[in-house]
Length: 58
Image 1 (cartoon, rainbow, N blue to C red):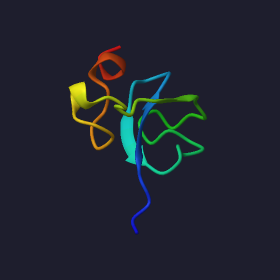
Image 2: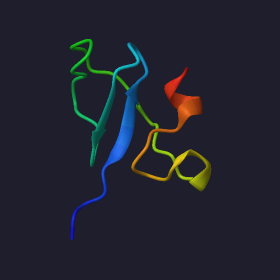
Image 3: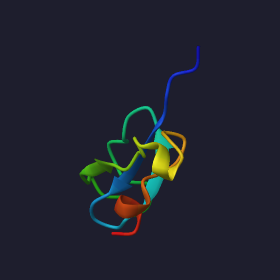
């Protein structure tokens, strides 16, 4: 069974990636940043394979 990947968004530069856990260093800004879980958890935005558009647009 495949591990579920989540969407993560860097709180500094907004870089988004899909991974099981967020990285230590952001690939977008090369800094040690806080990552926000941007995974969609409702059917309205297509479920966990998609990022939540409200979080992604911030």
